Image (cartoon, rainbow, N blue to C red; front, side, top):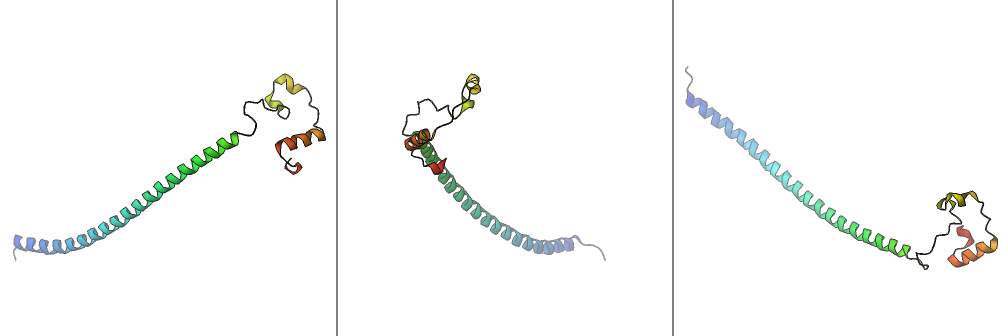
Length: 120
C-alpha cells in the first residue's frame, strides 16, 4: 500500500480538531481564572487604598496629639530642671553632689505638677 498525502492531512485534521477542543477548554478555564484573579486584585487594591487613607488619618491624629502634649501649661521656653539630670549639665557641675530633696520640696513639686505620691 502506498502512502497517500491526502490521508495524512485528513488524519492531521481529525487529530488537530480534537486537540483544539482540549486547548479551547483549557483556554476558557484560564480566562475564568484570570477574571477571578483580576477581581481579587481589584478588591485588594480597594482595601489597600482604604487602609492608606485610614493610616494617613491616624498619623494626622497622632501628630495633633503630640503637638498638644508639647504645649503644656508652662511655656516651653523655660529652662529645663537640671537638678535631676546631671548628665545634661556641664562636666564641672557633674562633679558636685546634689543635696537630697526634702519632703516639703517633694510635696510642693507634687502640688505644682498635680501628681500624687503614688506616681513617683
